Length: 550
Image (tube, helix red, strand yellow):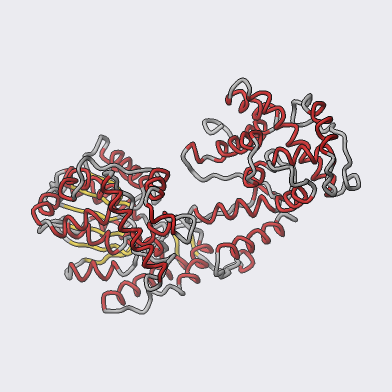
């Protein structure tokens, strides 16, 4: 973020309070800084009441950060409204629920509650897919990623959406899409309600405007009363949420609604190294937005092009005389799985000359990261995930749950895959699972049973000698720790071979699970304590985590 205001930023801040303005901004150019400064100036210099200022952000985290910045600028608490568009819509729903046919205050159900509600609809049993939630959300969000409405499946899914909406209303529930869809419907059809809400704001600011969908823009527009100012800040090149309905054409729609719009630009990059900006701009040239459907769109495209050139050739960090081409590889992939496979192959090559801690995978969205986790596990490559998640979804919580599932007798290989290299054992998930399935008889139903069988007989052809297995089981129970690999049995491979290493790792895991079972007799907490203390997992966490996170 820029340490001081530059002239381009100040020009945006100084535009009149009742004006409509679009700020076309490049990366790292101080977009958020401009919005915060403009909020302060609206209140302190143009006498706009604090609680008559509304700033709409893309994420909850951004909303909290922006409000903290405004408070820091003024040196006290500030009463301006800073919230996501969905939080704004939900606040309208909670206030006006009776107008929309709800019988009580609206609440937001969890995905588990929504799934339970869908399963209770008799027609859901006819679904050709195991999960209806993603399809329903896609259709309600205006995207038909999963389904063609012209075929029989499409007609079925459309009818399921109608039944789902009916059940949601019966339970006074609203989902993520309803937070936009229902307020938009209400304000479009009920003028008195629209005027009531619109009268509350004298200036509305929109952050990350390029990520705004058509419906979200229509909702915001309904809240703009006569004399209300409007500021939108965005970067057309960063519009990547098309699958959620985001549409960079909202810049056009803004201008159509407010023909006297003031257009400003921010082109000084305070964040990126010139090399990075230049390579990014090579990708940007492929954006479909360029070309301009009308004069205004053409003007925006021209401004973006100028910003691209400026951020490449002149940044706050210094000039850019030469790009080291060897630093960058730009590739195109048609699917997430192709991208993941390509990146993991590159990582394996890099690891031959670079330490593991010097490699990072950065993604704009969370969804691809799970595919990366699975692939890295399959290749036996150790990694640390730094994605912020609720406690129930935190990697450590899920790891501990996987250990307990395995000790309890699960058949789901996903649990074994998750903890196979925690602590690190250099095991490839695909190889381990193939050996585990290929060396155990059908009578070994659970993963725990399979691990027990291999610990007794080794990795070899299945043996039906269940009597010997029962005789040996008693001696196996004496082992408590994860680090003791003293169970007898054929290895099925030469010492030091991959088979021997896999066998040692699986015996190691099995012995630990035996200990977890014993400890868990004193309660789940005792079982978890055993995992942390004896498995090496707690030691692994201590080496990777510091301070509060530890």
